[in-house]
Length: 292
Figure: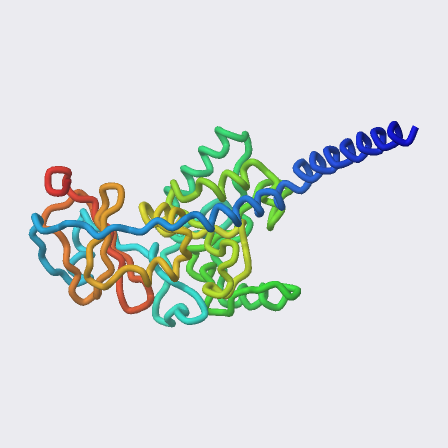
């Protein structure tokens, strides 16, 4: 009899355990995702290799000279904004409308494409909950943050339209991760040039707690490098030695002084972006015949 009762108890315990696990995975999918993401980030340690550019010829330009060239794009995509590197008073973002919000012009094409693909996959549009904020709006956010960490005025990417908070209907904030769209954005937004700006366990560097709903445009291929390396934007920019050239996915990357920007004499396209630390990030797509 006792043996039979033990078997019944064991079966009931197993049923309860399995039911609890199913419930947890179904209704607490954000916790499940966060757990997997924590361990996944620990394994990301990609190191960006330096490029062999000995066969290329180079010339030096000022930022003003490059601004007149049709094959060079100057944008805000590399701009580092945090408590140490705040928004300069004399620098203004280039904003464009996106629905009823405003975003930085450099991300318009990428955000539109990502939203289009999400709709094709999941039948729902990505909602931009918060995008560009004025200084007054940012102060209001700080005043009503209810103890949550909010960037100080001048230290928020929202004030430059580079950081946006996203969600889907009925799911915002961390609950965004309960949805397939939320997990897709967190896993794949780098393919469009976006990063999760404040990932897990990065508070000591960013000063902002985990925000899986806050994406930041940094452009291609930088978003993919950041994703694969497990770094945050601060660490990525700091990892690039001034004047050196790096290679990733057919792109040449260099962090340089804006007073004398050195570029290959021949290239297909180039993006130059001031990083707000006194330097600029140069991203070159070379001619195929020039760089192999």
